[in-house]
Length: 148
Image (cartoon, rainbow, N blue to C red; front, side):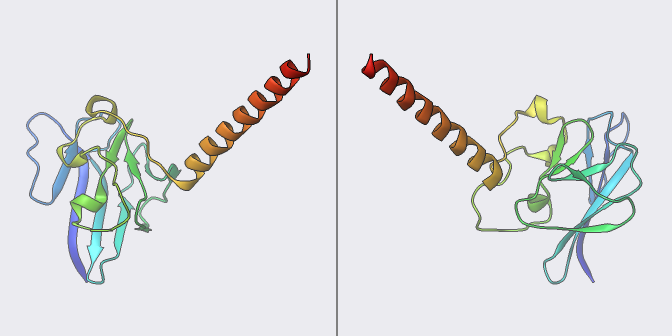
């Protein structure tokens, strides 16, 4: 049993969004691109409704016409740069820190609305490793200079 279902599509002149619709001003978003919904147990899902340019969850394209469960913190992208803040749209509350600040409930392209870095453990680990490597190289350089 579904609790809430929202259709996602492209904003066009003269198209007025219905109550359960969110429209994006992005030429790469299909007229009827995907649906997100929450079931009575609080699980959230997304379905690509055979869109032309695909629907991506954390950078991976999802299968068309198949539901895919959404997990907390996952980023949904459609079109050229449109991010869907599905947690906000489905009234999902997680106590996991920040959600992506791009408020996609108003539609629009991510670049026009401002972009943010989506921190996950892989990106943080990569940054930490890079900083550690730079510090080690600096110490080695200082050691070589002090020996001369």
